[in-house]
Length: 244
Image 1: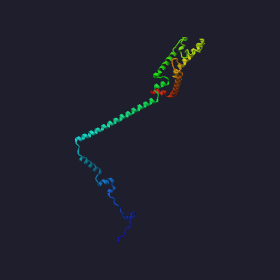
Image 2: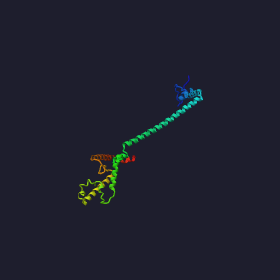
Image 3: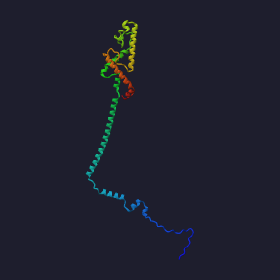
């Protein structure tokens, strides 16, 4: 019977060996390594099969290659034409838009002719005689004359119809003559001021116009309405001049 020797200090008795599961060397490798270690590469297999498929295809004849080339050229030409047609249609749309904008500006804002008509400066043939008469009267009124030249009858407001009840027709005194000259001078000043302010009334006194009193009142009302309308739109005047 064998005696058990006392163990040396510091020496631990051997513990019973616990059962350990042995791990195979392949299990410690990555999954990709383990997969490719037992099976052939899928990518290499696919590439080889693709190369075999390409090699097995028959080479088309030269006529077929020429037809394919012509089809490709035709498609390229169609793409170029489509791009060019798209650009031309875009330019046409832009041109139509600019034309529509110009028409809108012409329709919504007054032009040179309308503004002159609003001021009483008509350009139509029917009103040219009125403009010519007003211009001739203004020139006749502003022509320098000598004092006592005896042409008072040609001045506005100094005709024979207005002088019947005046002091000149009654007695022909110097006081009446001075009054007539003062009246003519004031009429002259008023006409010049109205013309400078672009507010000359076409229905003012004029011996050369054969219009009735009703027609004069109608023209006066129309001119007054035009002046009121022009006064309300005066803030757009300078901008409209720039547009023109």
